[in-house]
Image (spheres, rainbow, N blue to C red):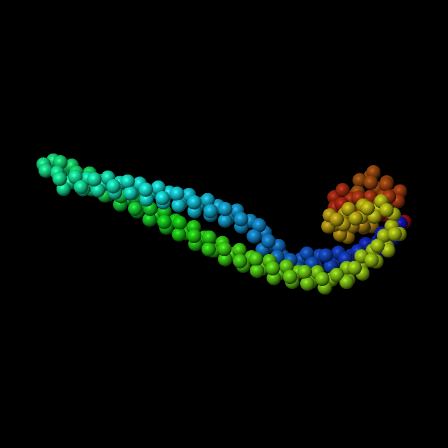
Length: 232
Ligand SMILES: [Zn+2]
């Protein structure tokens, strides 16, 4: 029964070769990395949105505060025109100067905030450019990959047809075990035991496993997960 499965695996190797070639193709790698970028970029854009809104809010508050102080200063300078004694004049002039300094400081602060806002907008522009590049990379390489995949389709169909025929001769439960391993991308799957050792990874096999092996069972290596048989 093992011979049929070995034959199956031999043909299956051709299918595996195509799969590895497709998975490892430059076009697929580029398309996948572009897709990953596009999936993660939303978060970057959201963060920039939050930052831009925060800065706009701070800027608006500074402007409002400035307006209030300028209004106060106007009151003082207006009163200055009508003040008569020197003490009142000095007091009002001092107050007006103090407010002038405050307004100046606020406008410097606002300028800094505006600068940070500019930096955020620049980052936006660069992210947008990166998104465009990634979209192009994804589309172009996706097409190359699909063409490559299509070019292998005939070979695949042929091998799959052969495998379907070969499968008929393999014991179903063994076939199932093989297919489960295959789905986990293990290949080759079935090996001949090398004396008391696994034929794939060379791990020494436990006594209980060995006795089952000698009874003609197909066993599984605990270390590498391969299926092992003993040649009669
Ligand atoms: Zn092993």
